[in-house]
Image: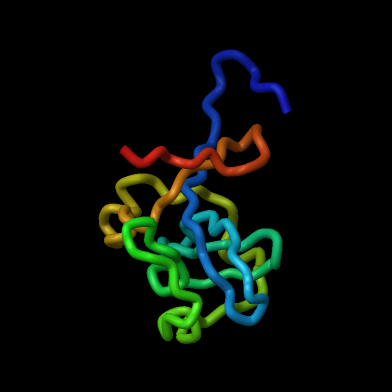
Length: 118
């Protein structure tokens, strides 16, 4: 979808998550619900969680699919109640989730743009 000049575009921050029930990873888009709660949405599985930190793979630690934190994540089917308002960087800092963020997705583009290590 082309962007109209002079309009603002939504930026969705994203984390890398692991879902043991599927035995694979997923991009987790972080949104802020109307009640202010942060949710991680795994669009490809149509699942969401508020256990964002437990669900995410930390790029500074070696990945271990047997890490018990992944099994503790409470996933639920996505629902309209959480909405699609992107969480702001300030929201992420307040929630202590900045270290979980691996990249971002622009509203007009498909796919996550990964932050480079460096």
